[in-house]
Length: 120
Image 1: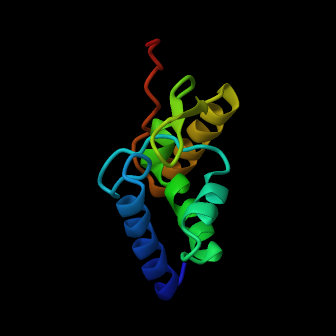
Image 2 (image 1 turned 45 degrees about the horizontal axis):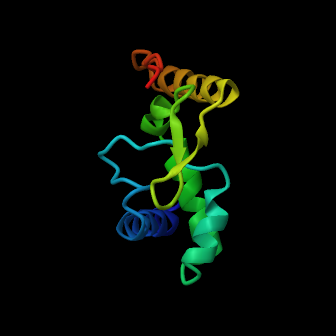
């Protein structure tokens, strides 16, 4: 990612955190899994933010290792208002775990695995 795009992603994320605090969190906080296709909701509710910026930011947001760590089977995804938007599926959780393994292996870091989901 080039420097200009990094700045755009950073500022767009800050704006999403400000507008939708029940959904998005700051980089240092552990994110909650978000609704699949949430970018379309953002397009509708924040039409002033260019769609390409939203796509770049979402790709960065859900590609973060903390996001993958939070994507545990059975955990509820959230919409822009923080309401439940369906559970993380086995397929989603398996993909997140594979991404975590790839992330840590490429960086030579200890493997961090997802915690087991607990029934409410």
